[in-house]
Length: 277
Image 1 (cartoon, one colour):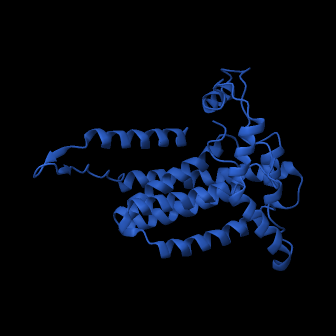
Image 2 (image 1 turned 45 degrees about the vertical axis):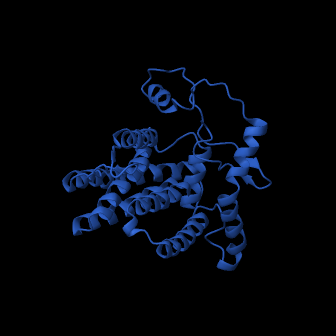
Image 3 (image 1 turned 30 degrees about the vertical axis):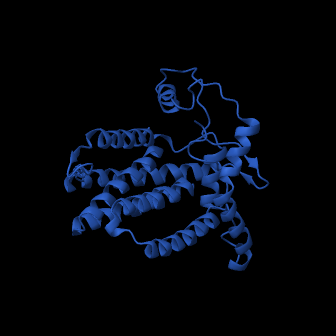
């Protein structure tokens, strides 16, 4: 729902800018576009409160993750946690929404820091970034790391004075190293107990599959397996899930957000964020 509201707000903001655009004649047919004043960041006090919520919730989130690891009966912590999250009957519970919330707080503090590079904005940005990465690690999903990177690229591009292609290439290289390392840690693209040489091939193959196979998988599903019935179960999944958890919609069907594997020819269940819709 946070991403839906974000996309809706973004679209509405674009519409307002278009509507409020005023044109004035200069010398003949020339037009002047009156710029709309840029949005001001939230106050530092309010952002401190938001970051505090993430800090307070983190120990409870880690405790819930540890409970899932125990239930998995697997020795490796992250492999057990990922297995239980993917195939088990239990999940993190309501605390899992802190992951999405952390991404929003990270984006807010990044925006404030890029707009005004004060000491408090720098501290809040760094703390929120570290918290977001921590939440993403315990969620065992590498897609969250992509979202962290995309938010940074997007915000930097909006503040073009802070946007540097060379710097972002270096950042992309660091991100790939982190992405591969996290994949090995989670047991998705190697084994943390194996040597670097033994992990090079599976790690590089897994990363390549993750990066390039999603569109192929989506195309395959659209042309072979996709049956659209417009029942609204995907679009309104959040509300259906909430009603189900509150026992207001006990018999409601809650769609599984984890997609089935497609073989293109490699096995992947990473299509795009919007493929369920």
